[in-house]
Image (tube, rainbow, N blue to C red; front, side, top):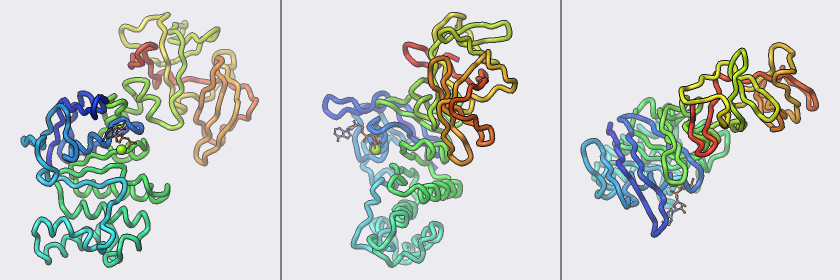
Length: 361
Ligand SMILES: Nc1ncnc2c1ncn2[C@@H]1O[C@H](COP(=O)(O)OP(=O)(O)OP(=O)(O)O)[C@@H](O)[C@H]1O
Ligand SMILES: [Mg+2]
């Protein structure tokens, strides 16, 4: 297992800056997920770690070894691409063994390793087929298998599940997680799918516009997003944002929004926050609920629409002139048009700076 250390990585294509000042460490055996919108530079960063792109600035170390100027085949990595890129004329067996053959392993060694990995991925019965005779999910397994047989120091995956349908993607998610738990290879995994990121990651790196916005454990990124971008990007349905002024009621903190004073019981006010200060309040749908008492006076909402999803019910509610989404259980179901008393969970609330969007609490 190998530690990967990126120091001050920058990349420009001509005048276009794609990555700026990326400092990251992937700990030995860690599963680090790069998450961000299309075009934010995820693949570029992965390709730089792989050696397929040269950075315009910064250094890359694998353990104590500076690999910045090494070719991909000198880095001891294996990569799985979004397009599986299998060799179409070779059988699955030969696809999987090809890199080992290039490394000069004997036929018996190759056969043993391929058999091992094929068993792990449950593709033993497919070994003699050509890629065109496989489903998308099976091709994907072969692509992963081809990377696994090499037992690389560092495993790089670029959106390997994005071509699969929802059901297969969910199955492969579980399988990849199990594989990692078994092998504990140092892994860098690129995705723009936050569910994928939440499922696997020991830590998530949220990127936007070529910069790291936050790097932390999934639960921290979800509960304490570092800025408005991260808050809005992670979580579905997205976090609710309400812009108002901090206020103090006799029984605790509140947000003044136009003529409303919305109580935020338990809001943890950090030093530096002041009554009257303009803030953006961020509340996840599960932190807006129906009040226990029917006290419509404090936090009155007006149900606009309900959206059943099975286990959850998402309710669009007009609150203080804005629409918010609340997550409820189907049994709670208020009807469209109904007036409801809401309770906002101040303990779970995030506060952001109105101007730069950085987290304040
Ligand atoms: N060879 C290149 N020449 C010029 N610009 C490039 C090149 N490769 C990538 N870019 C630009 O760099 C930016 C980042 O691209 P990259 O492929 O890293 O994004 P990404 O985060 O992987 O996006 P996606 O989720 O769509 O795969 C994009 O704006 C892209 O147009
Ligand atoms: Mg990409």
